Image 1 (cartoon, rainbow over the protein chains, first blue to last red):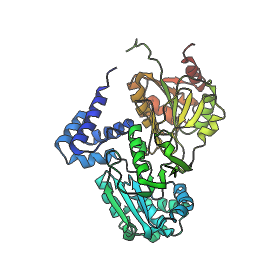
Image 2 (tube, chains in turn orange, red):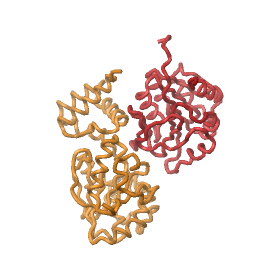
Image 3 (cartoon, rainbow over the protein chains, first blue to last red):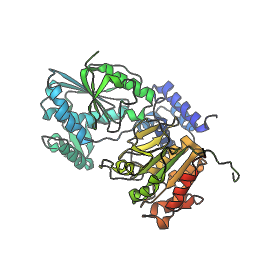
Image 4 (cartoon, one colour):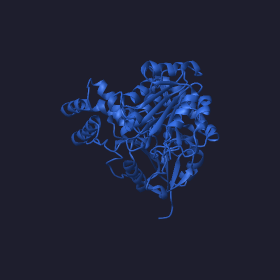
Length: 275
Length: 195
């Protein structure tokens, strides 16, 4: 059976974005990409993916907006509080044994997860010895992560999450409210580096004790998932930790045997000690 | 297209909201072990709740009932529920995908998102079923099932615990087959191919 016209166009559009701008979405979960590009199509007033392809090839100003459709940016501070609770209660005691720490938030979006970890590490007295890396492919998201400004309307949820995660301080200690926004304390990102990095095409850049990559892998097909998990495996120190999203699993990965399950419900894995 | 030869069925998708547990408890236990088709389902639940739906229904069912995992290959004889707070999608290669992108019409998981992706993957091989519910999620999705040549079934609104959702689906798909729960059960059993 021949491919549907729309699917041919979709593949060509992704190929065009890759060849022209080096953003590679060809290995993403197609059902979701198709949905989001369908919304982009409407937004740009195009009736076909071919029209959208024409637009993005000949007008580079379209790209940043198109990227905001292609990359999902939905997060919260301390999202899934039990994840942070287990990090705090079970992973932090292991991390304390290292004189210096590197933590990588892969696919950091607008920085919610990185600020959560920075707060947690401060509460646990680990901040001084830690360097945080927040990486994403979307430059706009990285800018927002660096700014650390979130809508004031989201603060009640963040506060509740932080409390449920076993927070030892008040979240209000870490931001100032101004003009409908919560501006997070600059000192939280003193030890953070935000940079452009693609799990699809870039390589290992440092040796990590903890990698948190939650609700990112679900947007990849199995092949790219394997590549990303391979990067995590190669980046982690022996006995290093990998945290995934609440519904993500290493079960279907070729690297599954390199990791042991550290906390099943919270999807925290530990790289095995033996070589 | 009136004399279209019916395509072989490949999968069934079910959407339900208010009154879902009770209605699904009448439907799913009727399916025999080894039922040939996979069933994917979105039921609206409070987002902060860990889903007990699969567990509750598993005990009553002969088919396998579970919460979907990302990139899980789809197997017959299994009911996959979208986990709370994630959209469930079907990939062209017959695997399931989860997504935490924005809620659609205040719903995540969204019935529309499941139905539209499944219609795209299975085309005429898909059966879409809209049951009880108090909102209009699923109407667009069922329309996508029909547009792709699939079969649309809607629970009789006057018999549903909440009529808004089946009514909205009917408004969007006037040619959908309207059935009681007993008739839907009979249909799901009828489509089992003879051995």
